[in-house]
Length: 67
Image 1 (cartoon, rainbow, N blue to C red):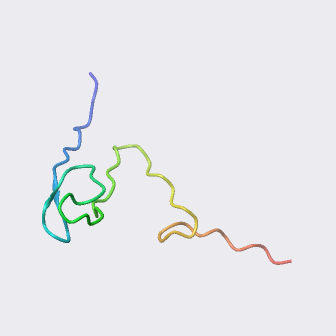
Image 2 (image 1 turned 60 degrees about the horizontal axis):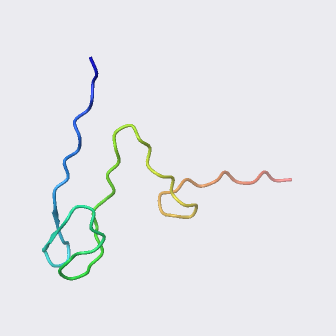
């Protein structure tokens, strides 16, 4: 018997700026052009992409040893 977790069902969301319906995967609102604020959805068990150094929430490197 194979266990397969249920697939995430994505549905359209509303634009935070104008309230218009924004399709799943759209980068911008089709009505006002505002950037999408929908967080990325990751498949279960698949790690998220690492954050760029210096980005908010990115791990900080350890301090260099002093000589």
